[in-house]
Image 1 (cartoon, one colour):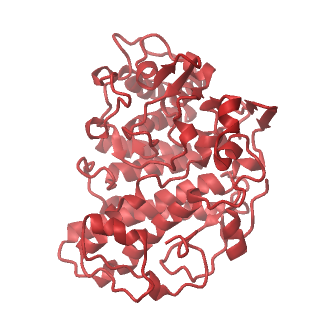
Image 2: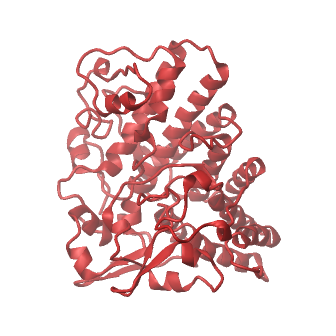
Image 3: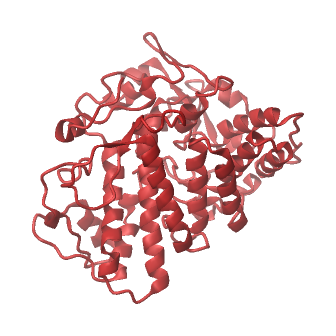
Length: 461
């Protein structure tokens, strides 16, 4: 499979060798999608076959990029841990120029593979028997959502920062809108990448089911599409639209998990089957240093949790022998880090957008609604004199709520454009490494094999 879709922009492969057939709907589907045969295959002839493609866990498990999480300031490594880490993890931690050292990069390969499957579904929907219009719409909406979700994750990892003044000229990622990898595509301008993401999501919204798919959390729903629209518009710094989409999501589904009902005893306290906040379940690339017992939480961040804040108990455990705190609050319920969509993020988007749009009371109401569900005992509501002061509170809580979700890197790319919130990242190891706001290294290099095969433009480093 890797030879066919190393990046899904690879040239020279016959389209006939990429057509999918699904003759089984459970374990055989995974086995089949792991390896595409070299012979001509028939495409699925019914909706059940297309649904099986979208339900395959290759689209949702350890598929979104983890490079941003490796490079952000949620955690720190001891020098001994860093020096013994695998090359990619070690290099990403210090923002090295030669990041990959010739390795294949699943952070690029897997999302493009997922986009390929979504495009297969979209390409063949009108060629199968439509005996269930509701399921037809849900499948089409799911494929559009999946393409948008993975394009966004690629763009926030490998594309230029979204800067409104220069988005028409800055280089984004390669847009893939059909399942034919023989098409020669270059990189698109950042503004065009985001326009396509928004187009896919807006088209998906009326097609997706209204209710969260509790029995199939890897299937998107309408609230999840609104949540992703809110996230994308927040990244674009369109705070009016982001707030509107957050409101649209919360009007349909606004549930928050009361943390005082969560059992803190298990090593992973959050069970996704019992977590009403999850709108869409997905996890990011699995790098051991993200969750190792020697990976410490940023000390200032850890100390910012106040007494009574249950996040301090549920998110972290203490490694007494090394004198550090380790993250354990994955919404996946496993060691894999959550990169999906959930209502706590949407409440924070509503709060931030309200503050940025001058609505102090709306910002505080949204923020306090979220925090009240995180407290042990009575919660004293936050107050602020101005909308700007409320914005500072919201961003502080966003930092504390959404760590280790592949959100911090996108936040750094966005917030560093505002001198009020810009920060320099520092690693102290064998020497001191720094990453300045707006540094070119906030866009990861395109993998070496992709540059070699397609000739697309490399990012500066």
